[in-house]
Each structure stands twice: as C-alpha cells, then as structure tokens.
Length: 403
Image (cartoon, rainbow, N blue to C red):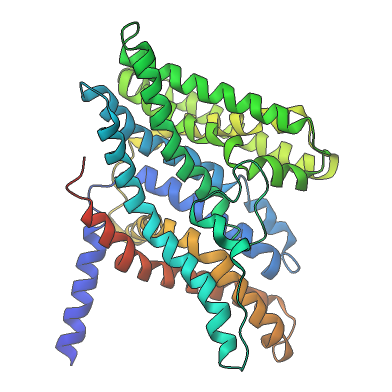
C-alpha cells in the first residue's frame, strides 16, 4: 500500500513538473495575477468586505483586461506566424486556426455549461422538486451570442468575456483574409497585418463612442453596455496582437534593455491611472474618456510590460521561491478552468448554502469570513485542477499534430 501511495505521488509530481517545462514564467506570472485578481474581486464583497474593507486596495486593475491582452499576445503570435510564413494565406489555414482554438476552449466550456444547467435540476430532485432553467435563458450561450451588442442576461456571468474572445478568434482571421485579398498586390504582408490592427482598434473605439452617447453616465450602465459587450472590447485583445507584431518585426526594439524600464514604468502608470479613473467614476459617473478610451489606455499599459515579462523564461529554482514559482505556474495552467468554475458554479452555490444553512450555526466573525473565502479558493483550485488534467489537457493533446 505504501509503495502504491509513493508511486502515485511520484507520478503526480512528474506530471505536474512536466507541464511546467518549456513555458515562459513571466507570462505565467501575469496570467496567474489575472485569475487571482478575478477570484479576489468576486469573493471579496460576499466574504471579506464587511470585515476588511481596506483590502479592496489590493484590487489595482481588472484581471479580465490583463487576460485579454495576454490572449491577444499569444494568439496573435500564432496568427501572425501563419500569415507571414505561409505563402498563400487561404481559408484552409483559417479553419486550422479555428480548430486549434476551439479544441482548446470549447470542451471545457460546454462541460461547465452542462453542469450549471444540470445541478439546479438534480440536487432539488432529491428533495422532491427540480428547477429547470428555460432555454430562452441559456440558448444563446451555446454560440456565445448572449452579449454581442446588448447586455448579457443574469446567467453564467463569467461567460461574457469568453464570448469576446471566441468572436475575436472567429472574426479576426476573416478580416485579415479580406485585407489580404484586397491589398496583396499593393502592400506587403507586414503592412497588411498592421492595417488590420489599426482598422479594428479604430473601429471599436468609434463603436464605443457611439454606445456612450446613449448611456446615463452611471457606472453600472457602463459596465453592462460597454465593458461586457463583445463588439466594444475587441481592441483590448488587439493590443496584445500589436505586441506580438512588434516582437516579431522589431525584435531589437522589443528587447532594448535601455528602454525596458521606461516601458515598465509607463505601463504600470497607465494601469494604475485607469483604475483610479474607474474608482472616480463610481462616485462621479462616467465620461467621454471612460466610454471611449479607458480600455485603450488599460490595454496599452499591459502591452508595455509584456517585453520585460516575455523574457523572464524560468521560475525561481531554490528554496521557498521554487515552491512559489511552481504554484504560480500551476495557477496559470488551470486559469481557464478557474475562470469557468469559480463564479456561477462554485461561488454561487457556496453563497446559497451559506445563507440557507451555515449562517444559522456559525458566528458572525472576521475569522468566519476568512474561512468562507479560503474554502471558496480551495474548492475552485481543486475542481479546476481536476478539469485541467481530465478535459483540457486531453483535447490539447489531440490537437498536437495541427498547425
């Protein structure tokens, strides 16, 4: 029995460490920060805000904004290399790109969507009743159309950002292909790709400006009608694509050691100033800048710290820093599953059980708030780790022979 336990632990450790090889630790660090910010923001108000209101200062930016730019940087690198290195950019290449993206994102998403629909039916069933969520509520989530131009319904709230990314994956290669067909005899691929970036950034900024003209100025309206709407957020991802473009065509500039400190300071300044403007708008309403340029400045801020982070290749490998490095890499690996599971599925049910059952027996103390918060984090990480190794990695291995 001891041998089996020891062998099992060695196997798990080998799998765990193998997954961390050949990764860029700096990007893993940013991804881990992004998902931990999201988890902290969502868990802070129900569990900690009453007892530790000053901890809100730890929220220095929106983790989703960081996710968008990171996603654009990584996916933009793939899209750019395909476009530049393949002589004839054609629909077959685009379909291969879509297949790889969808094998990465859709299996886990549809599994979580099934659980969200299944749990409210099966658990109450054992109590003699069941709650069936109507198709009108969740049907649009099958094709990510729930927030294309209008606010998303109050269901699976985390999915709004996934819709932004999925439609970005779908539409951007098509726009690039159309630009290529129209301008291939006039401009080089380098210029065509840049034209596509500028076209989307300017187009989305104009679209956001138009949306803002009809808003009341309240931050909740801004959040529902601009921040969480698909076609008002493409430029956030596109700034990551622009970073990939600069890294590919201007590598000397990208890794200019004398400029990196200025990039970092400017990026951090933009991240903090946009967050300050968001906090100001909570009490003083939104304005033209918030409606039109807020996400552009936030995206540029993240883009400017990417050069430094993209060359931080390896995690620390000594002492406690080594353990922390492995934890950060693991959180980065399971970040997609964490994003899918932590909110509607885990936090939502934990809050319901807290109100219906636990609050009757547990005292109203700061320690209990911390206990709830840590339980929420622990369950989220455990469930997400399981989903990563059983679903995500399985489908990623299946796509290994694609482009």
